[in-house]
Image (cartoon, rainbow, N blue to C red):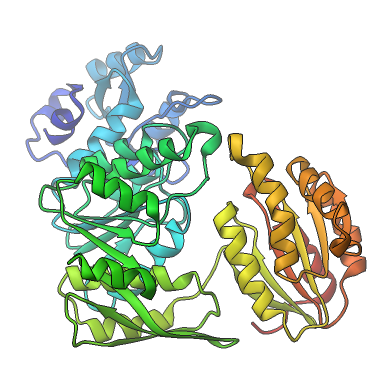
Length: 489
């Protein structure tokens, strides 16, 4: 049986089920709330929960197999049931349910004919994953990670839910601790791996920028031998890593036009953007590559956000590597929309809002301020609510002090600061004569800031919401919508 082989577990079945040589399970589930009859139930453990407590619920709902850890106190009762109940679910006894879950996903990956495109990086993973999916799905049957299913629970779920006739799976690989990207790469075995950028995200848990680089580049460890690695050619850390480590798979780059010229002269495959044009309706550019010097691919994005250009270039590179029609791939980028509080543009009454509150890093703060500054040029005032950027470790103090200069350079008129990290931003601004009227207040939580923000905003203002997810700045956007109503995008 495949599950027994993949997990290295011990299989127990009733006599009735043992006689069924074609025993089939419809899927694998870790959640009894969505479990369907005939599925395998894997009870995962966490710091605050143990899925083994839900084994009875899984059995009642008709699970075809229960995976149980050898140390679990519930095991003996289910072994007794195997001996006495011909309709009892099969048992797969394992040492660790989490490891077994990942091993089963890794095994199932070997049955897929789909090309797996693995996307990681400190900034822009989700945007790049969604952009690639948008640019290839009209030509082949493609799937992508759902929401943020990018960790040691979410990625196996993504793999195990992939249909057998899918031709491409765009999978996001995230991390919360050292060594996780290598594990996820070993599960997904990417045909194409993408690293969007090396930034300071997770510096608190990983340490230095070198440590972050080592973690992100470990995606190459699990790749197929004939795989392809596509990197951000504007990132000197990634370029230096390639020069030092000489990865065993081919390397392509996406880059700005300036850096593309240097890479191209060195004979390295590179994709870049020419004739970039930004206006309030969106971004347009011409895609180019030295792999096919005579071709031009016009790209138009309906969102006026410059950082979408690298994501679209990654999409072009993937489409080219997969042998797809490049003009169709380029045209498909027009369908891309922002969502989930990632530079999401909404109009609330007579106030324009850019909600970028899903998460934050120094790099994404710079991008958000750059875009918002452009969009706010003809507005009454540029108002920003900036919450703390978390998980930056040793870099946190410097980043939040530098944020003061970023706010000034962006032309912010008024700023509300939220969270203990932004005390340094506040003090830097209050010590600068240029920012005498900029600071509107400092607040411990977004909830505390809501009354002041609501009283400050006036028709014609532009509002930017930016913070790490911890600070829940979307509550400010929700409060504004509740008082003013939502207009057209």
